[in-house]
Length: 247
Image 1 (cartoon, rainbow, N blue to C red):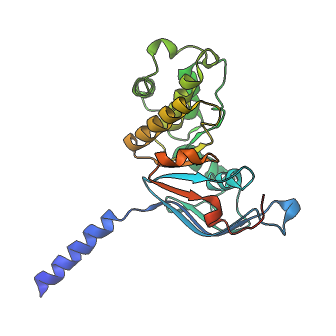
Image 2 (image 1 turned 60 degrees about the vertical axis):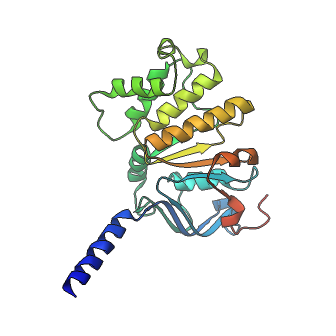
């Protein structure tokens, strides 16, 4: 009987260590802008994204996608409800704490990449370290060179101003900047809206592969339903947002 109990104990212990935690966890979240306090933009009872998951979220323009991303990033707080990232409550953090948490845990790939034109690829990536509260590793420049190499950006382009790079090359710089601090969560906000299909498919494949290598959770947001085929799981914002007639 004792041996049986010990076996059960260790079996339970092993299962607990294998439990996949939530990267994103929203509960009873409601949000409305102050000028329309009686009209919710978002009302989400419960929604979770597991660590390591690569999720495609879709919805038409004006459906609240950007508002949701602002909430997840801690740029905006909900009027009601709780938001947890990696089991830490954004609601209970000060503005400064949320800024530090975002810089340490979230990598963001913007629709227009938001690169500084006159800076080189390497200098743009260094900005991510400058904004992070983490101490700069001694081999940081080596890490930048390594990730640019893995992204197939030619060494001759590393120190060129990014406004001299092609759109595809700028995309790679955007990915490198988002990943360089090894964030737990990558958010991609309509990053393929201005490129052709061949470049788009290549970009998503590359991003997915890099997230796997860095063990990052990926939330990819777009209105383009053709992109859903690239992801194992997908969700419509309207599936979790119970606000009706928003658009």
